[in-house]
Image (cartoon, rainbow, N blue to C red):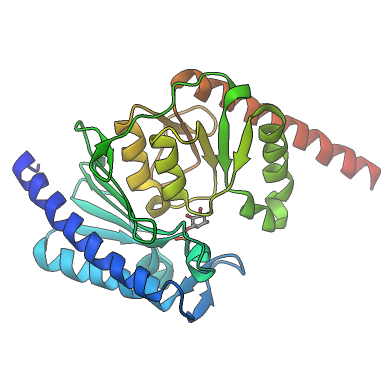
Amino acid sequence: MITQKELDYCYDFVLNLTILSGKVIRDAFQGSKKIETKAGDWDLVTQYDRKIEAILIDNLAKRFPTHKFIGEETVSCSNFLPELTDAPTWIIDPIDGTTNFVHSFPHTCISIALAVDKELEIGIVYNPILEQLFTARRGHGAFLNEKPIKSSNVEGLQNSLLCLEASYATMENIRDIILGRLEAFVTVAHGIRTMGSAALTLCHVAMGAAEGYHSDNLMPWDVAAGVLIIREAGGVVIDTNGGEFDVMSPKLLAVGNRKLAKDLVKLIKRADVKTQQRRLLLQTAN
Ligand code: LIP
């Protein structure tokens, strides 16, 4: 159990800390970085990801000694994803959009959320390069640089700007699924975008700059803050198959409104059926 007053304090504290930590990204942005790979050639980490995660966790742990942490780089080192419990838990991506950061492509951010009783209470996504600060508290709305934001009410797929994560097509075992979904999106939408930062893409859906975002293969820290920001901006987050969204196992469809969400679920299902048929044809041809 946590009081509103305690949550107010957590919010003020983490907001200051996040803005201060943004300086690390800003100072390192144009320079050379030490780059290592994690799950594959496409999964990068730099010394700055680790540095920022250490700053965030050290300061939060000092201030809130009973709180727990799920941080991208800590989990990568231990290879162990902790369970989300009822305890106040900070879910942290020190640099979301690391590949963008490595290339000095300006869509990169710090993403941090607080969950209490497994409910997202605080979400902050901060891009210190473009000075975009997205914030949300459960039940209090969503904001970009302190101004309220609202998700899109465009209901037609044919009038939508849709985002998805195309880079997973590097993985051979799911390449056809990703490209099949990409083909389906391109065929119906006004346009598609692939930004390279799940957290910032979610915030663009929250501010109504894009109608929808879809990606499987994400991790809790990529999405926790952005999910609260979209919901507080009036948008919808569901599982890719249309069911309830699970932040600890995110297969995600984040959409400006419910009507469009339903149509996207159908579109993705049809694309996957087509992919399965192509696989069968290939198998019989071989
Ligand atoms: C990245 C995401 C990106 C996703 C990558 C990765 P990182 O986060 O935001 O959109 O496709 O898998 O998780 O690794 O830069 O923090």
